[in-house]
Image 1 (cartoon, helix red, strand yellow):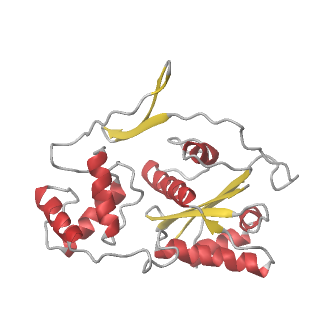
Image 2 (cartoon, rainbow, N blue to C red):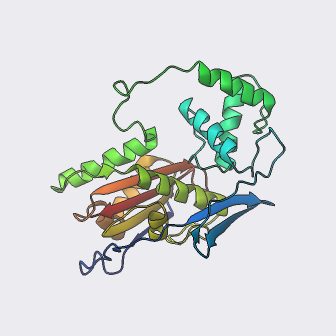
Amino acid sequence: MVRIRWIAAVVLVALLVTGLALPARAQTLTFHYRIYWQDGVMKVELLEGPSGTVEPQEQPVTDTGVLRYGSYGQQVAVLEQKLKDLGYNPGVVDKIFTYQTQAAVMAFQKDNHLKTTGVADAATLKALDQAYAGRPQVTQESRPEGAALTADEAQMLALINQERAKNGLPALQVDPRLVETARLKSRDMIAAGYFGHNSPTYGSPFDMMRVAGVKYRYAGENLAGASTVERAHQALMASPGHRANILSPRFTRVGIGIVDGGPYGKMFTQHFIGD
């Protein structure tokens, strides 16, 4: 028996019922914030001075030269990017050493016959640097279309656009910024142990989009928890609210974030916008 219990959809007020939508603001506020782990708790700090914003100061919470769960800073971002380029999945490259970063480090350690601890110690970092230096170079000409998406995300995008084609609608285009916000939301739900549109860390999906610099006239979010892409897609299409988002003629761009973890194996977030 297929068990899919977590699905939810949200749209802007009266977006799909009356056709009303929230217009994009003529002006936007730019600000900086810092997200970090301290004593096992994710914290968000807004840094804003009386004359504007200030740059966040990195404060790694780990031993010098060793990166582990809870570390924060540019060194973590470099580690995550190298793991990602080598085919591992550290999640969003965002300076935060999360459980998914730890899982990627463990996978790399296992593949390279290192002690599998999930801690990026000196031996792991050295092996990572060597593997990264020897990796095959991918040119722009050889890079496949949609390479920014994982295999699961690309599969879900294809399913969405198949549904739209059946209904005479144009395909949704991938927006890399929405991919990042969607992945961040999926990771956050797993890390914080909740399922819903309002994140205790980032606020609403629309807050996340605005912080990421995404401008829109229409926007929506679909969420699901399931063991496979196919099961998640079937559940979303069977729900009127989710189906309406997938088949909305107002939406033109999408970001899909699929992260392994949670009670049902994978967490799915779809972020939609329209101009």
